[in-house]
Image (spheres, rainbow, N blue to C red):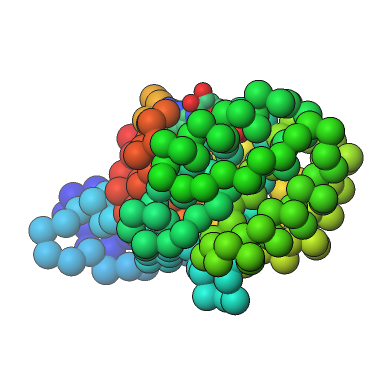
Length: 281
Ligand code: GDP
């Protein structure tokens, strides 16, 4: 491609095929790859190639910028601008990392934003989940509101909000039940929790290792809830993290944070530009 002055239909085809392969290898869902390639082609065709760049290098630039733009829109921290307590509802499949992320966010809010943070678990199906949240909340330096497997999730939610209000907490983080597969009862329950809690943030926690399946999970949660943000977990794994692109495109919600270890300080603000490089490999 060197020596040509502009990106044309003929010199773009092979490159785009390679980009397509790279995205599929990174586990971006096929319909999302198709859309993306079409957008890049539109943007790239006819573009002048400046200076010493070859059309191939120029196209890589277009691809990288478009990937970063698709996955990110600058830094977006948690929105807490409401009458306290600002309620944050955690949603996602079982094993996605909701409880771990709840504690990581609690620590982030306590240390970086100097907030008084309360956590509560509305997961009445797994008593171990309630205990797990208690342990990690302590480690985060936040407060934990007790709940019991015999309580109803909505009652837990109301009691926790009431407690948070009376104790002047700034933020209430609500961890919820996940299931191995998406089922209607689970979605109805979290919709009810959302209606009762009226959270300012509804975060969808998704495992970056979930790969192609992430698109179906994301679609189901987007249909059930007005998502305000995404937390992509397990980015310390060896996946190329293509799920970021699929989930962002399907939900339209910003990817706010990335989980980068099992430890409580393993949370980073999502960096779309850096992640674009990883997805491309
Ligand atoms: P939940 O069922 O959605 O509440 O998921 P958990 O918070 O219990 O997490 C499930 C597993 O994933 C646990 O073993 C966590 O330690 C692990 N985990 C969560 N987030 C991360 C992460 O960012 N990186 C790694 N490596 N492991 C994580």
